[in-house]
Length: 432
Image (tube, rainbow, N blue to C red; front, side):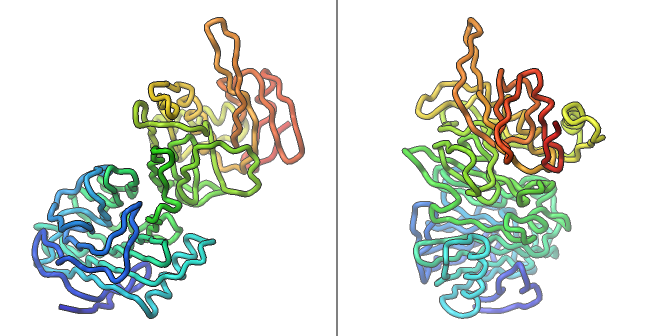
């Protein structure tokens, strides 16, 4: 059965048309043979299933209506809106493939906009749309979401598009996962009240600056690779407040750095300045491995005691601003081991994560600072390997005995007891 609707066929949605899946609760499409192969994080698929409860699978249909948190590691799955849906009362589930025409032109433009420098040309697009489908058993609600798979040459991409999302108390998982969870992504708002309704983060948020659209590369590109048998395991995080020099997303990379335009798997630290290579915050860039021990945490705060603490800290370090924090992002590499020496414990990373909270709370320009990170032995004699990173605040005594700043104007030597004299104000200027 084929059909077409035009009511919501506007950005960010791709055309809502094609084959209509049967009206069966917890059902699936038949096996769909793909007209082009789709590369999905190291595996190549030539068929797909559109499952009625808001997900796509490759090796067989999936009737599961209870959303499950990623990472799950069981299967390769794309889940733009995994929850208990029911297309029997209202709504349609469409799927379609394109190998020519305006849809390929649109996909080519979109991918080159979101992933510049690839000179990408789409030769295949697959669109699955859950159009105005109801939640079970509340027939009458109307929710529209879409998954768009795009291929060309050896590249593959995934778009998740969101139209109107009805309110529900059901749990909703949005994102993707892979076998073994070597790659996975969780859209911010999953399993929270922010997943549905008029203020749905899926519909209002984006990682490509287009509300209601989320874009990912799935062919071992910028979404991550496996190096020396160790996976970076990235997750992107939508920032609840903007930082002035970056976009509205952040990726917490497991090797001790944050990036903003895309995840980054690099485990070999590079000297700063990198002369415009990318925006990066690197409190401890080295080859880390959180598989054996340790955790990599991230969290955002828009109210509560953490904001009070941040307000107190910033006003102490930057007197005269009368600063009030309205947002804090904390990334912590907690007791994570070095690779391949599983079992080492790096408490020091937690200190830097606390410093990172201060770094991201103020909208400043980034300068480069070289500091000697001192590890003290039992007799209190320091061993100080050189570590480079960009920072916003150089006012925390946890950073050892000596600091060397590299600003645009040259080198400055900062004595330990005068560190707080050389700080950056919110315009990015030196306060001397």
